[in-house]
Image (tube, rainbow, N blue to C red; front, side):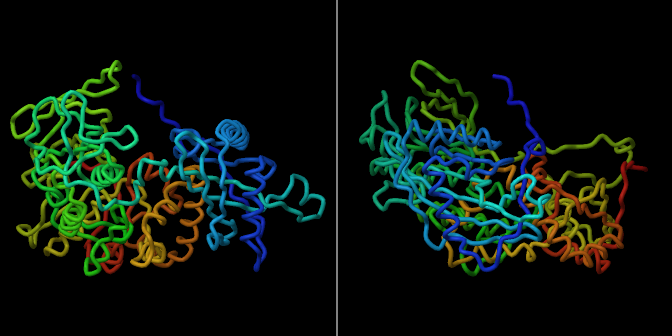
Length: 520
């Protein structure tokens, strides 16, 4: 199968309406009225120009975004006519007015049942804004009507199949390898693990599972935990010898650049209260291990195990997977094969530099960097000014080195405390709900919202960023952060303190060059 053709987010048209929303306003009633009209298929409530609907298995039974008003309306009419969703219930006290500079919108949540068989419990999110009819301003009027410009619908659970956000107390401590397609129990036709003291690392060839998850980072752990909560017979494998080593084997000073609560694992299992705001690699390792212990997932995890080959059999709708485990091969069968290998991988991208072979010093990629303990008093160059480059430069300075950072192009800088993430991710909220609120919107809409937020932050940070520029650091003040994250997978800096070090002169020099040449 050929790879999917990339489609740039910038090619998806999206508008945020700038017509003012009065203050005060009965946003709850506006949201309720908009939802009622949508449910009754009064599609004039959908924005005229650019409306977007992102459906995550709720009505389309797949992951789908309808990226125009016409597509939105057609899909809503067709899918609701086909499935007859019902029990629409507005979530009280969920609505609010969000103002970002000149932009204003009303947000609200609702619940419904999708009408499929078996029935699914679903969650919906609305974004509503005033739309001024074409020509109204020219006629001297400011009449407007509230319209839905963003809709998200999410399947949360299926009747009789458990809830991926709730871990039942009766779930067993390990999977049951099935032989010849049989297991000890079923949950609505899906195999259900039974209590077993068998270590699955000793399962015989021919063992059969509902799902095999490859990779045991945060995504892999979350996936196997949720599938286990649904009663599925699942295992996960990773080549690492110890859980969390995919973090601790990196450079010693590694830390996350987002608040710890934003990195919580499923079931509202939050990092410890005494853990630092920015989790270190060792903090993550301990946190992941405590998660596995809490939900008794140990026997489902196959460490020191990698996938050698996988083939799919259409006649049985299953995968045959050859695993290499501690030098031995094992063959397993699985209905589903899930890869959780991280966003970008860890293959270093090494530039070809003339004269590098003549350079007498140490040249390493960040993937091989550990610390600068033995380099105190020496000069070091860090090429790259995204998160990793800043982390390593900070570590080198703290080790007593004279550091030069080399910047090829302008870098977006976000002051993490100014993002106020601590107001939405904290100990007193259900992180599951917050995640759904912030990670289920249509990307085209998220893109323009985040750009508006970024512009507001730049206005607040102008003086500090000017000082950073005065030190030679070129700041990208026109960055498209959603495009950076989803299409470039980084190349920005979430500032957790190093920008101030540059401003204060603790990083003794800063270079902005298009080409670096190693000279002997």
